[in-house]
Image 1 (cartoon, helix red, strand yellow):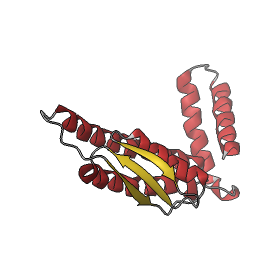
Image 2 (cartoon, rainbow, N blue to C red; image 1 turned 120 degrees about the horizontal axis):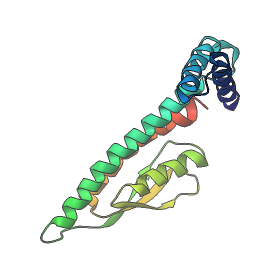
Image 3 (cartoon, one colour; image 1 turned 90 degrees about the horizontal axis):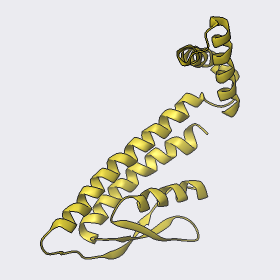
Image 4 (cartoon, rainbow, N blue to C red; image 1 turned 180 degrees about the vertical axis):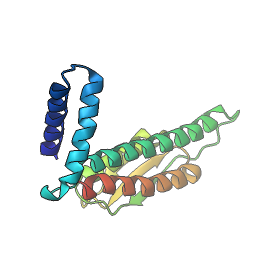
Length: 161
């Protein structure tokens, strides 16, 4: 994948030199031409085109932003109540992710959503213990987020790497 990026940047600079214009727009158009050239040459590479990996990473960022907003609204609703009525607790999440990178990424994404913190990962890496601010509401939200996060993480780490 880094080799593809280097080829694409080289094509972009070459395009800029042939255009005899040292502008960002000329570089950008060369970069797009480079992506098209790499797309047609993709059968010569042993890995998928890097643009697909970038797209999966952007999709993961979008999913995280959406879940972050939803959980932040949940926490704001809890905090703004006249009488705080929360039941904090710990629950277990089972995951089918493999490898330290995938487990760590899932743990970080869950920790970054307000109202939940990953306390421990089991030694085999198949379960996470999560502390939630309000177990009845937060547990459903975290479990829903976990399924969405796992699918997006698998897209980034397994398909295109």
